[in-house]
Image 1 (cartoon, helix red, strand yellow):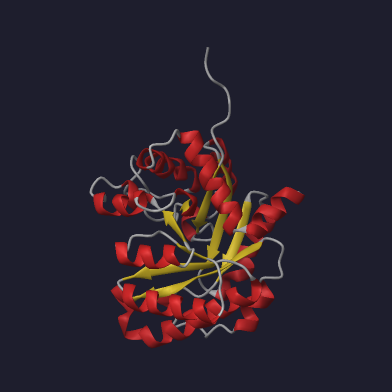
Image 2: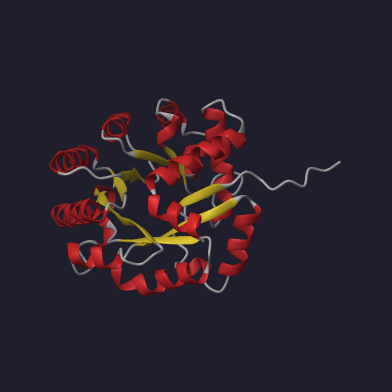
Length: 271
């Protein structure tokens, strides 16, 4: 007899459903996600001028929540956000996080000071709203750790290190602050042994899963357009890392998401 039970529920905690890669296909993409057990998605706005479009996607699709901020790679070319701007956006019932923000010195090191200014603004918005900060970190581990730690000591806030692929030192600094690490398809790449070791050494109650779609598709879809349904492939790698049954790992990451993204969990409970 075939097992017709639905797959364990998981959440794609970070994707970009407003990107042109998905234009005109959102209904099918969200349906495929749900068929794979991906019952919730957080779509991330990376330029605040696009917030109305991202908000409309969340409003039109029950499983979709959203967050907004200025991506560090865009910080020098976008108007500087204000704390009040971000706090005002947070009034929307499906707005559940601040960002993504952070530091990226891989391609945009020349705008480091602007990125730091933008990051501090986003941190203050997270502190004021109680919503989790969503951090992008690339080739900037020391500065990220310094700023996140200093601002946390000033006023605590919650945070996820999205698509974590940095050093063990930055992972430990983030975990020591009570932050979360999110596994993307990078963690499923065959050569990502060191990154998998970092995740395996982290507490299971601080792990999230994501796609960062349309980027970074995990095997067996590597090199193709990523989409929320593929969260399940990364989650299966996570289950192996923690020596858990897939359903157990899925349940743990769901509980982690609910604990961090409390507004999404409360909205879903009230629906």
